[in-house]
Image 1 (cartoon, rainbow, N blue to C red):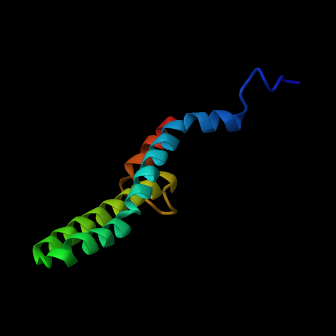
Image 2: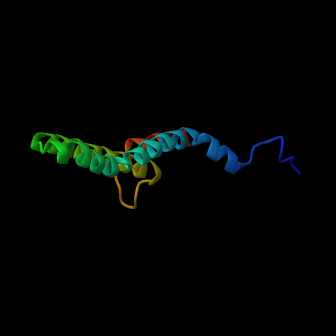
Length: 107
């Protein structure tokens, strides 16, 4: 019988081989969680800057910044989802994400 403390199990070896994906997913999730503060900060800026000055240009700029940050958040969520979902049935190698290709080479 093997000593479990001396040799890593298959599960721990598989998890260890995917540690880079865990780190990337953690970093993306941290940024996504920070971006979830965008609506609250947007409303605070509207009440603080736009309503007091009645400046439409400030309103438009804040709105464009917020929409850009929402697009960034959506792209980051798509990257995280793409890293964790493998190629589906009937998918071609061209349709798989770069992260999935890297993961399959690591295994």
